[in-house]
Image (cartoon, rainbow, N blue to C red; front, side):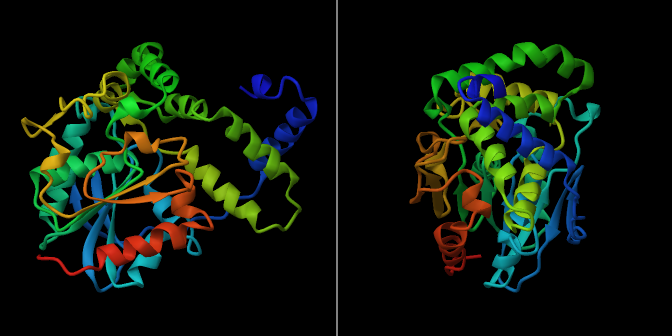
Length: 330
């Protein structure tokens, strides 16, 4: 990918390699201790970020660690919300193993998310980011919640570019033997495919990083975000297959053919208030893939930038805090 993107410009190739080496060799700062656990279901748990308001459970993607919502003490949506009259609980999916091989995405809803919600003791709001929003939407159709916020959550997978859908659906054929043997789909197999969703940006960000002056505060921010993006537990075998074959390949969610708890998931049947946040410039989860239900909040920020970027607080954090703080029946 590096060779193809810089074939006509050797200077870009050298700059990207400088940035890559700088990233690889940079010292790392240890993350703060994990927040306390207030509920467990199987390998999954809810981590409490404090705050005195109504509970909102944040559901991260199954891909990459959940701490993008708490990237650093200085850049944390969850810590900020806790100071704004919301009590955020972060769902940590835990680390699946071979014994979880048959748990598909619906199983994550039925066996992990819903049992965690049952332990809270009051109706919670759900806020799902990326694939976590897809899962949260399904949970809201089978379990009563106060409200549902979808943040860059794909539903109509036909809204992705055809080439990306073919690449991701075809990935399963290449990795299935390894995944079958391991009982999980390794994160590394997915990451290479996600790089190809926007190869120009993947290379450009390392070019730009290599040019930053020593001491620039953007260096630490880049390292923290890139470490998050290149880390994460594997997917269960069944969830990996369902994501690549059934969602990206066949768009079973958009076609109304995804069943959870024995019935098809219908976004239009969601009984609670819904805020659907999608960005018109998101190249990872296109706005065309959003569920398109409830109140919409269109943005012009990148998929990750809306959570941790410099404009994210004004564009997403503050509107989300206001929406979550609206009085609703418990």
